[in-house]
Amino acid sequence: MLIKHGANVNAMDLWQFTPLHEAASKSRVEVCSLLLSQGADPTLLNCHSKSAIDVAPTRELQERLAYEFKGHCLLEAARQADPAKVKKYLVPDVVNFKHPYTGDTPLVSTDIACWSCNLKVDNVTEEVISLFGAE
Image (cartoon, rainbow, N blue to C red; front, top):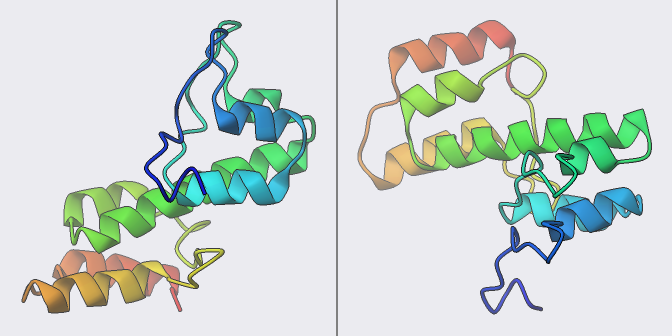
């Protein structure tokens, strides 16, 4: 509800903890996914120089946070139809990332962005995507 009304997902408390720090430290996977899908940055450091990824208690959660963050960065770059950003975030482990709530994929986002802006998909980006076998 707060996010829908414009709350800052990266807001920090007195100890520079973000909502993602709190959710990750308590293994609240669904809350972490929601925050990441709304633009939370898991690389922000708290007063102990720890990121949300650092405070996650399990390796599995740490890897999931990193994966979802990279996936959302790729989706946003694709939505913006920004070939430079797409190339930056396009790596084999996230090429088939699917948004956990909307089901969007980088290819669908790129197609929609390019279609709505009357842009041509960059040939190099298209080639790189096909090399990684994106679905």
